[in-house]
Length: 478
Ligand code: SIN
Image (cartoon, rainbow, N blue to C red; front, side, top):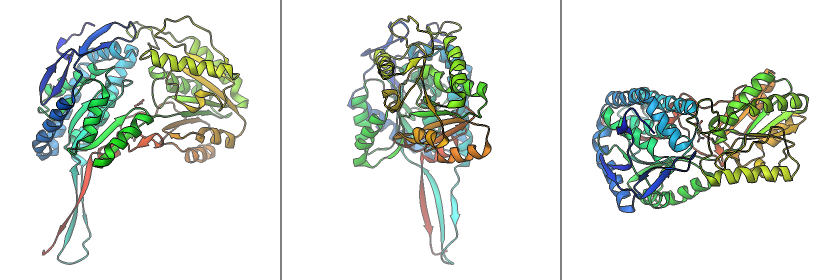
């Protein structure tokens, strides 16, 4: 990995502005299995030190005028963009996604920093009409406090900025635990934050195994909020650990997105949307189409057009030019994908795409026809490049299949009938719905789910509310 700025590659944790160097755990490149570097496995005592540092730093940080915090965020935003090439290369090396997608993630991640820098100036309270002549009541917005941020490996930059930028804008300070598979993107972001002038202790990064760090963060009464992106199982566990200290929670958890194509859809647009939604990051996103539901009249044409596109995808190391799907994050991910495909085929699904002979770290991009709700891939996120197609006849059947899941993150549908567009859009039980688009991820739009997909919203105006409390200030004797 040849970075223009070698200073962006830190193999350390960051506590109170001091880098902690210790080579406890290796981090590997998923495309080769080779060790990229090492990181400290932070202890409970180090986690407590980071929490204390964040608590001390918050005294000054929350007191700064909003415009001052906004200016520092804007400087951070600009530095992230200025270092796009290095950040993208780091990201691809530790995570595996193709470089073009990694560059896209840098821009997506930076957009949250700019958006929340702008939102910092609009943290408005209100004056409530008074119940008596000598009183006034103010509703004032205040930062929640020290926040614990636990982020996943699939978007190592964007998932940090989507949580950290609103928190910093609101006046909170942060203790961040990035995935131990992808810590270097987070550490590079922290280097740039320090260069932007964000003070010591405002942003701390703990590397290492999740159990000890997570248990210490969730048990601490100083930590007032936890924001987590990851599986529903771990989200529920963290919520349980936070219960005794009643922290504010944002949980962005698993999905099982339906992608519905009605007979009257624009075929080319639907195929394009399915490619974007399904194969972004090799299918390793919580909003990716997990179940493709296609109405009988358009089914065969859709399947053959989709299969042609999938057959043309190039699979290989993310740094190789022209590659559209990189390696999966680890062997467990590949195993799960293969188990889902084998289970589906054993229950009657048929591949509509060519078989490939790929090395172990890669998963075959595949379109499967004849998928049914009895298959494992209908019940769980596959988190890989598998596109199972379910055939349906009526709108009611499609809605019943689509909503027949405990998850409620994202859903997509394609139709040109406006009445159906509203009917189906309202009937889908999901936090995000895409009509005639396969992409619902934007800095300006609220991102989050219902049911087992979590609590709270990120991005948009809603995103900053998650880091604010409302204080009612009653003024008497006026
Ligand atoms: C995720 O997969 O957790 C987030 C994906 C996105 O922001 O689009």
